Length: 462
Image (tube, rainbow, N blue to C red; front, side, top):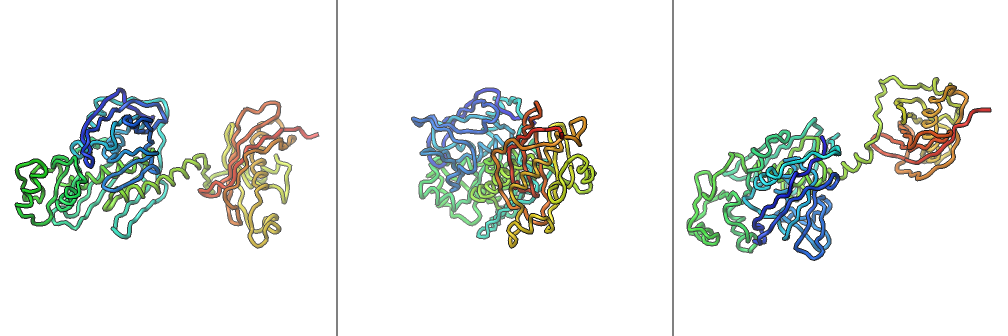
């Protein structure tokens, strides 16, 4: 799928839960690659803040982004709405330091964004594809989040607060189609004893009992409830048979678990790209969600760096085996460094080398710590690239290639006996007057071990 932005500008206003201040937000369309950004219009510099997990400065009671002297807090419901609607690029202008709580769910944001409409853009969307399990576990709380390979997107949230009222709950979302109706309307929840403590310390100035499900999991004398109601500007409140304050009704029997799923989606959207995988979250919370997303970020950056990594199946028939390579290449033992060609196109080629302890260079290069010399990795790249350009000549066995230039060579990991190295060479420009420019990368498994830019000349043998 291609990236999306909103089709028109829309705004929304409300009160911050913790600050109690009126805040105005304006959502504006943004170009491809822009991502989601906040702009603090109330500050003189009007700083921009990228929505990125590495910019999270606090997870106390909500998720807070920071940049310079500016912060934006309670961003999780808004980010969840953007994630659930698959909106990639948007500029959010905000004239305060906290996103409004509204009704405690993501629905008000979803509704405004749906009014704006979405617009498909001309750039393909990038994804983080979960290729192997990624786990974060907090031993102190028992919270755990796991990402598993899955052909699609799925989130499962499981909660257990050891509460006779809540019990154990779980919620599931497969794909995005049901997000707006099944997940976005689910409101945040708080236990009554926590709510009293927050009011006592003046930490929820924008709370009014209509933007949170209040759960009373223990007996509360009516005088305490009356005192709480007075603080909230209500005549009285009561505890229903279901163990919640009668200020609102549950929209789903498992609304708390669904809201935790909503929060997970908002927090993991700090990765910056959508996920193809299954997320299993047990007792999630903002701190755990953000710590898990940092693991995802590291895995995503590794995956992006290895995006061009070739795939090797030893059961596949090679393009050229070693005997066929010997008919084209002049090199012989101990200097032929390619065993076979496993893939080749018009402007790229992939060669393979199986390394054993018997390689001649291992006998003398760090004899007690055997490492393939970096210069020989570059030579193996050159031989691989040479096979690409030589096979495009009318008489490939009568041509040789010679180095003209080596640039940007980097060696990132050791190559040792037992490794299978894949050398990928890509033409950076068409071959002209016998000059070929190629980009070389070498991989061992999921590791990029070396890379370089090579320029060589094709010369007919005399």
